Amino acid sequence: MNRRLALSTRRLRGFTLLEVLISIAILAFITSLLFGAFSALKRSKDGLSRVQDRQREGRLAMSRITRELQSAYVSAHLPLNQALIQQKTIFKGERGTPADRVDFTAFANRRLERDEHVSDQCELSYFGSPNPDGSGTNDLVRRIDTTLDLEPTKGGRIEVLATDIDLFDLQYLDAQTGQWQETWDTSQTTGQPDRLPLQVRVILVLNGGSRSSSDSGRNKIRLVTKVGLHMLQPLTFATL
Amino acid sequence: MKHRSTHGFTLLEVLVAIAILGLGLTVILSSQTGLFASASRGEHMTAASNLVRCKMSEIELQLEQKGFNLTDENDEGPCCDDDTEGYSCSWKIERVELPPMPDQSLDPMAAPSASAGGLALGGLNGPGGLGAPGALGALGGPPGAAPGGLGAGGPLGALAALGAGQLPGGAAGAGKPGGASPMDMLGALGGSTGGLEAMVFGFVYPSLKPMLEASIRRVTVKVSWREGKRERDLEVTQFLARPQEGQLATAEQLQLQQQGQAVGALLNGPGAAAPGTPGATTPTTGTPTTGLVPR
Image 1 (spheres, chains in turn cyan, blue):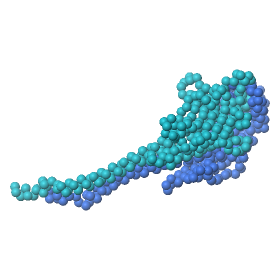
Image 2: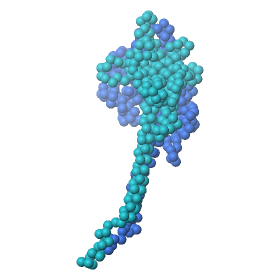
Image 3: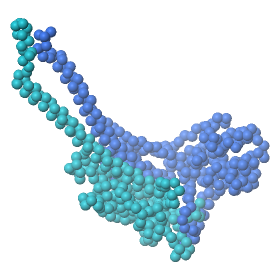
Image 4: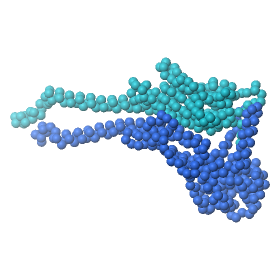
């Protein structure tokens, strides 16, 4: 009995206070390291998804703008009696800061409902607009009006294409001069009354390309492309 | 045994435990670097796809204005005029090599159109008489084109009418006597299923082949950038067609088009036609490829 007790004394004694303290300290150290690693993981994941969101906004805006610009047209179909004019088609680009403005008519409307009473013709605009939440940022917005009328720059509904833009710049290649123009106007005789630009250069710069939320102004997402237009002449029935 | 259990861990046990821990942490952290890599890949891809479109537009414009070169071009430079640091473009403009005259019984070029448009022609694979192709033209064409097909006389005219019926752009050729312009041949090509059509195609193709090859260019644009140590790129290929390069747009058609534009200019002045639905313009570019690949 005595011998057995003596043998197992050390086992039954448990840990000393020092042992427990040391083990807790080591455990705490390892836990804090792991926590630090995982919180860094989460931070960078948040940062990445923020950047990805901005990239997606830019990508979608660019693909939409290029697709719709490609189907821009102006029509030369006008009634003989000027009083009977129901609708006008234009292609008009103006300078602005931070965003240029472009208004045009295009075969770009997508019918979303069956038997909807709209065609694929629409009035479109892209322009900058201050963010209504008062943060002082600018958004790139798109206006679409599926009814052609006498005011091709007004009406319809407005939706946001990309938030917090730094620059939206459009340039137009004139087929006659071979020069890039900052403005374009088919509605004025002093502008380009009888033709559309051969190509349009689109530059979209978005703020917030940085992974950390604090220095969102520094890193910018810059997207540049050129898009060729197809219907360069005003449409008439007589054109073969 | 009890004695041994008071000894704590052996060095080997500790080493194995540390190794397992290290392995687990490596897996977790490597998934993290994969996240970074794919995020930066996505960013570069976004920019590159816009740049590749930009360069392709520049090349399209250059070819449209200056015409095709007889030799292949292979060049590199900045992608989009300026501000494309980190990205460089290389591009190729190559001639295409069309396949030689295919076997008449197993015509791969006509195969896609055979299923679509040639069903009614199945009985005519044999050596049809002169009268049969005429009837064929009347059958294959739309109601408006049928008189032209009948009046055309020879089998060539009938074939032209047949092709014109299937190609919206070729409808102008249906009324011409003889109808033997290259464009109409192309139209016939689209509808050929074998037999007599393939025979005619066999006559025409050797002379058409260089014309087609002269009017088609294959353009490849490659945007490359560095991602860390790795070189990445995005490559896009497209075919451009200019019928006038191979004299495929005849003087007659060009004249017709000019007349159309003149009438259009007249209409632009006073403004005559009804508002609303604009007419479709058919530029000369693209028509021969339509002939090769109907629909």
